[in-house]
Image (cartoon, rainbow, N blue to C red; front, side, top):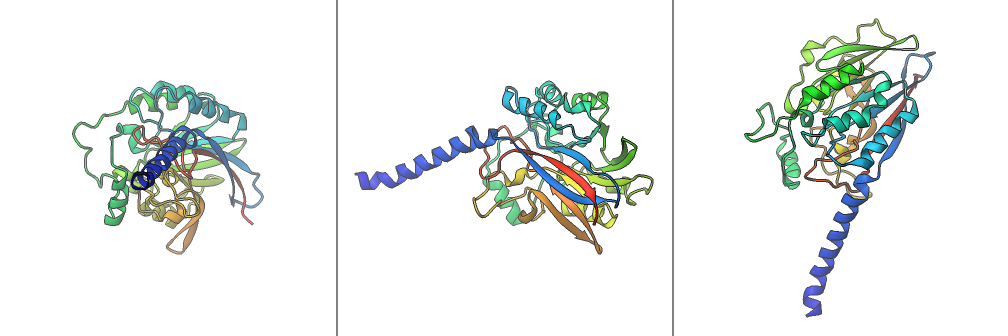
Length: 308
C-alpha cells in the first residue's frame, strides 16, 4: 500500500509546496534590477531612468503598493511606465496611490492590453500551444464576448494630471536639467493597437537623446524602431517568462520575441542597425495566475551613460 501511493503523494506534496512558494513568496519578493546602458552621446552626463511595468494591480496588494511607493527614494531623473497596470477594474485608485510619489518626477507611459480589458481565466498550457502554433495575442480580433472593459480612461486622466506624457502612438519630449529627451511610443502590439506609421521616420534630431517605448516587444515593432535608429527601446509584457525553469530560463515570452531576450538588457538588429533593448520582467501577474517561479517581480533603474 505504501509503495502504491507513496510516489504520487510525494509528487503532489512537492507540487503543492512549489505553488505555495511561487504564489506566497516569490510573487511578493520584489526586486530592483540595476542596468547601465551606453547609449548617450559622448560627453553627456548620465541619466537615471526608472522603468515600472506589468503592475497588474489587484485590490488589497498592500505590500506591492508600499514597494512601488518606496521606489521614489531612488530619485530617478524620469520614470517610464510600460503598461499593464491593472488586473482588477476596481484597481485604478490603488495604482494611482501606489505610483503617486513617482509621479512627482517627470515621466511618460503607454498602456498594455490589461489596462484596456480585464483578465480572463486561461489554461497556462495555452501559452505553450500558441507558441508552437505561432499565434500570439488577439491577432487583431475584438476581445471575446464577456470580457470586462477596464476604466483605462480614469488611469489616463490620473497620469495626465500628474504631468506624465501619454505616448500612445505619438511622440513626447522631456526636459531634464537642460537635456531634451525625445520619446516615441506605441499602443500595445499584443492586441494590434500599434500604429507605427503615425510616428515613423526616426528621431527628429531636435533632442539630445531619443528612445522608443512599447508594451509588448513584438519583432515588427523592434524592427521598426531599430531601422529608424532609436538607440534604446523599453518594453515589458513578457513577465520574464513568469514560470521559469532554474538553470534553463523561460519557456514562453507571450509574443514572438525569443526566450533568450525575455527580460533584461539585450540588443536588436534590423536593416544593418543595432539598438539596445530592455525588457522588464514586471512586478505583477494576472490575477488568475498569481504565481512566479525562478523569475521574481522587479522594477529596473537604468543608468544611461555615454557611448564609448
